[in-house]
Image (cartoon, rainbow, N blue to C red):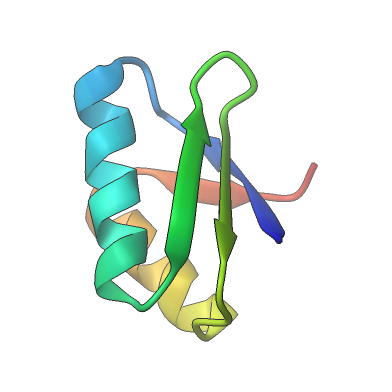
Length: 64
């Protein structure tokens, strides 16, 4: 399972946007934890593509 720390998620709508973005990139079993600002998922979409796609939605993948 891959864990990403995502800056900028504030509400359920934000979480749903990130979840949908990851699923569109081929991630499965996506789980969003707003309190920890994390997204966890199975699969292996290209990490740089994931970062760009999430940034395009107004969020940032950050190092923990």
